[in-house]
Length: 180
Image (cartoon, rainbow, N blue to C red; front, side, top):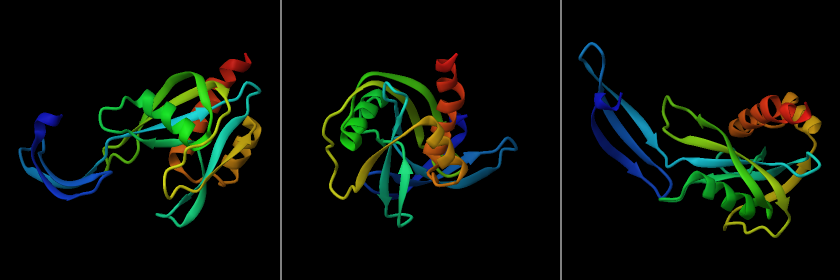
């Protein structure tokens, strides 16, 4: 499909993303253009303690001017594999270090305007430690049972899309397998 792209014109660049006008060829041969946000991708972590509780975070998000309930996550650094990002973000945001981290799925966040893919990982064999928050981060950890996570999802208290999708995937396809 990328052979259909004819030209990319940079419109804006920040330290985290770039906006480009992308011209591409349609099946009819006509040329169309879309503005696209280019993002390096991110890693999302589902930290699960030995007793089954899930470590969520409460995180203030300036874009929506609200504190959201989320899973730990962060942007991939240049050249950094998603697994390494997951381990780094887990420790930075929760203080936990994982004895095991395994990939679960990759999600395209908003492919109509954004190329960001989020790589979701399950972190187990957790050992508590201290957080290493970045400047401006206001994060607190919150341990919940799978049942509490379901209640938070049902009541729409969890509004963050990556957290909704990753938790539902985990609770439906991974946690239930562990119970059998």
